[in-house]
Length: 385
Ligand code: NAD
Image (tube, rainbow, N blue to C red; front, side):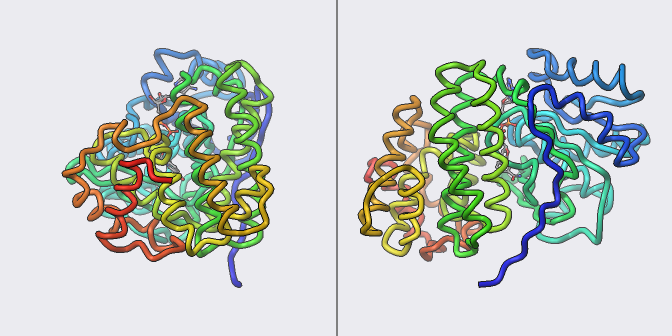
């Protein structure tokens, strides 16, 4: 076993921790930050205003870029960077879900590399630290606030581009649970399932290690307990906070262990049909696990974390899959690709994209083939668990 472990992000968790943003900006030596967010958060919630109020009273000058869209696109990143350069920005604050955080990470790449974001896709493109980035997640799902990955859609080619580098990991993550209360129930459940998928894929990944296991297994326990609670009572701040921590732990887990075939397919159906990322993971999770089960005795760990009492590894894994399937149903989400608009005639195209997705490399069972991906898609189509 060999692995690298660094905790690069300072995580500040708790109610009203947005008040810490000015202190952290000063510590990072930032004079003029840019908030990167989306219009829904700015116009339909009070979240951006609350952060602006903190900056106005405790800080000074700043700029807001609010043009991020769900599944951010290359042209949005390029535009945000151009504005940031013109404004003389020296620090970034992402406020939003994974789309805003990933856009900001991509802008941070341009601060060192220049040019257009499409030209820098790949791994380890940076030579050292780039512009400071404080991430303020408003969903509890992606874990992007601590991950070394950014996913940006190439809107011209209809595929998701992946950027991986330790230097794009945000310097600070502010986990203020009061920011997640305004999420509509569907976004709460989709993003919570995204976090669960990160934890499970970190467990089954060939890159798993004891530290990623610790993050992932406790993340699973927290999500199992707290996702139903926040759906039942959206203002339950304690459970909202624990969901944010679980999502962060899922992000840390997959950063140190990678993901697998579930994400590879989710990225593909997300790019083709615009299915929200967490939902795309949801309709693939039980079936990716079912495909992997014959070669993944580690699902016994997932079963243990879910409270399943079964000593036989294969049976424990099967029970974990069944419990996850029932959990998805219990929180009112669909359990098949059929329910989210995937078309059978597109299976070939989905498989082609999934095979080229770097997430697939660390899947525990070899899945880099058209047949394997189509088999998993068919399982989801038929809800075969
Ligand atoms: P998102 O950022 O796309 O946001 C979805 C919608 O939720 C938006 O309309 C947004 O305005 C709204 N929203 C967010 N917070 C809200 C709140 N508190 N109240 C009301 N509305 C709110 O959603 P996401 O699922 O967090 O992010 C998905 C993106 O993250 C995808 O592009 C995915 O590929 C990427 N991702 C990245 C990583 C990573 O490690 N970098 C991991 C997983 C997913």
